Every structure is written in C-alpha cells, then in structure tokens.
Image (cartoon, rainbow, N blue to C red; front, side, top):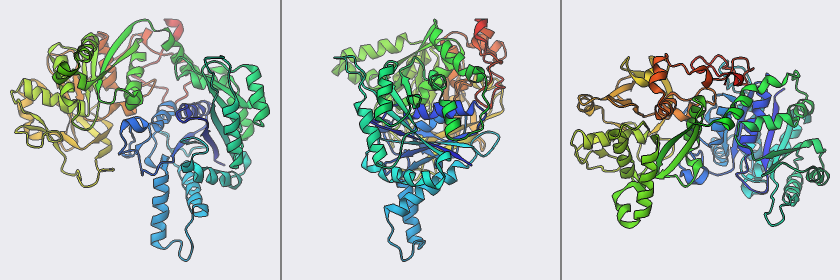
Length: 592
C-alpha cells in the first residue's frame, strides 16, 4: 500500500515546510524506499507561470514544461527525482477539472458542490499522481510526501483540509500520517520560548478533523525539554512526537537533525513500513556536505546582477546552483546582490551614492552572473555589467535574458550597431538581434513560452562548456523563454570571435554563446540551475565558479577532474540513486 505523509503548517507561512517535507523524503529515501512528493498551493492561479518573483519566489520549471512553485525545486534537489506539472496541485487546477467535467455532463442531474465534488477531485488527483514514477529507474513510489501550502485556518485551504480529513479514513490509519510544522517564537524581551501559537494552531487543526502525528517546531535555538513537555501535554502527543527543527548553518543539516530525533523509527512504526535498521552511514554524504560547508575557508564572490534582488527567493535555484558549485571546489560563496537599475547612468544623476556602491560591488566581485528575467526595467544596467565583464576579462555567465543581453552588448559595442536591441524592449530597432519566436502567442500569457526540456547540440569540439559537460555531443536542459537570438545575424557575430557553440536540433535556435580570448564568457538560453544537484553541480555554474577562483584551466587540463581534496568519499552510502557520479567523485573528509 502507498504511504501518505501530509505536511501542514501553522502560525505563519514561509516557515520551512518545503525543506522539512524534502528532508523527511530524503531520510526515507536513504532507507531504501522510493519517494515522491506533491505540493498543494491553495491559490486560484492554474500554475505559477504568471507570478512576479516577489509573490512566491522564483518560478521553477520542470522537464515537461510545468511552471511550478519553488518547493518542487527543493524536492528535486533533495530527493534527486524528476517531477511533472501534476505534482503541483492548485485550487485553480482542481476547480478547472471539476468545471470541465460539469460542462461535459459527468455530474448530470446533480448539484456540483465543494463537498463532495471538489474534495473527491482532490483525493483522486493525489492517489493518481502518487503512483507516477519519478526516479531514473521508473519504479512506482512507495511513499508520497504531500505539502499543503499556506497556513491551517486560511479560508482558501479549507477544501484541502476537508479532503484529507476524509482521505485518512479511505486509505486507513496505517497508511496516512500528518506532520504539522509550527513556529515557537522567542520574544527578545524575555528570551522565553512560547508555545501558545502552536497550541492554538494544533487545536484549530484538530477541530478541522486532522490530528498531527508529529509536531515539528521551528525555533531559533534548540527546544528546551520543559517546552517540549508542555507542547506534548497541551497538543495531545507523546514527547517523542515533538521534533525540534532549530535554525542550522546549512539546509543539508535538516535531514540529519530529523534522523537524530528518531523520525525514521517513528514513521516506520506508525506507518508499518519495512525499513531495515541501517547503520548511521546512510546519510554520510549529507553529513559530509554540511560539515564541509561549515569548514570552508577560501572565499569566492559572485555579483548577481538582476532586477528582483530585494528578495533572495526570486533567484532560489540560481543561488543553490552557485552553492553546489562553490561546495564542489571547496570555496565559501559570497553572493553580491546588485539591482541592475543602480548601474545605469540615470541613477548617477538621481542617487549617486547608490550608483557608486553598485559599481563598487560589481568591480570587486570575482565573477558576474546575469540571470533570466522579463521586462525592460534594469536591462541597460545589465548591459553595462556585461560590457565591463567582457572588457575587463571577468568570468561571466548569462542565463536566458542574460545571454540575450550579452548578444545585444556585443552588437552595440563591437559590431557598431548602436541601436541593437531585443524586440521585447524596442520593437522598432533597426538591428533586432533578439526576436520573438514564431510559436509565441501574444494573446495568451500563461503557458505560451518555449518551456521544458529541450536538446542543445554542440557545434564545436573545442567549446569550454562542452568540455565542462564531459565532452557530450548534446545536453538536455530546461527552457523558459518567449524571445530568441535572431539566427539571420549569426555570421556577423562569429566573424568577430563571438561563437554560437550550441544550437537546437534543427540548428535554428542559438542556445550557447562563448567569446574567444576571454577566461570564461558564456551565455546559455536555457536555465541550467533547474537541474543542478548538491552532489552534481550544473556545468555552466561550475565553470563560472572555477574561473572566478582561478581554477578553470587546471580543471580542464586534468580532464575535468577535481583534485581529491575537492571531492566527496565514494564510501558514503548515497542517499541518491546516482552514486556513481563520474565527473565529481565526492571525497572523504579525512583526506583533507
């Protein structure tokens, strides 16, 4: 029987349910179980594709082109799985499916209501999606972790709570359990850990018909025993069912924190799961990663030049990809967030201090990254940053819009086309070096981009990026764009050493750019950050970090191998199926 673990949240949203759900999945997967994950978002949008990153953080893209919540990115990175768009369930999707059924006449003669029609649709969706294989070996999952977004008590999440109240009886008690994540505030005035918000949250959840099996307490410092006992007494659970998830130095420590408090043992008893009692080494790779990230001494700084820099979740996957690469080369990562608008000459007139501070940050960074984005605001600032990286021979990576702007910058300053631009920003440009794609439908905004996994074929054998990908003939990466480099102008660029080394299968779309006579000047049309993993960093980001740390040439000369000091041990029982990672044999700590 499939085992379902529902993760709910109380007191406030954004409390870390996604990391906790991922961590629970990770420790179960490391016990040999096949785990899948579903994220439920109670908003009415069909998907996350039309959100501003300031709403819920970045939009994560899946292989099948699904534009989803960033928590699915956490599930993929922690569990090393490939999810589909149906793993992200929204109120909009449920209502749309029920309304479509009603129009077809499936409910003929009946009044369509929230209970039972909406709640039944939610349960059917979960049961169906839980069985879809997500591992490389295409085995049906045994455990499904379901994260319910928002906070218990929200009006919008009520149908979902009611659906799971019914669901627990349908699938039987031994196949369903509820983990409730709650906040334990610690007011600075008294320094005392307060349990009342958690008591109220659990009371509300129980009033709605769900009883938490584990209460995971988010707090800034470790939970005191007396506080644990108080929660146990007032929330109707044993003290062993109260789990402390305090702030830790690295998110890689969260699975270890849960495992140390007996979560695996409790879940195996509660859900009657046949988990063999493995030795502690089952999470050795996670332990090594977390210890290693705490002990790094050398530092490497990357300037992230974007327009959503006030909210770090806007670039969650980009930051993770940089962290994975920095960890692989044993460097501590410092990300310098620069609002691209601050680099523009008009800022010098209006706010000179902001302008000079932004340029000081840019000039002092070891490498420059221009990530994807939409809209004209801040694009000229990004072009100034790219120009500086090209002329000063600073390592540079442009992703999606970042690559398109690198093409604009080169056209303006090297080819002499001063008005070169993207038709997204200047439809009347005489030199439209970036144009919208033929299949782009301007009438509909949602889901009309070139989305999902596409193949990029390398055109040159001496491309730096091709070497970083292990000399692959082609790569398959995820895309999310409406505009593309104008293929008709390709010859003008290549004549000046600006090479399009990767193209799509038909050879019509420019996918990868590289500049001759530069330590590392790379642009990619796809989003490599979406497939980066803690133990298998994304090659374009790894190249940027290696170049920024001055190690790229040595790495390429060694045949793309890291020195033994920079890898993890092969002895650690992997928590991912992909333990034979060839390009990054991850090393024993003792060898450092």
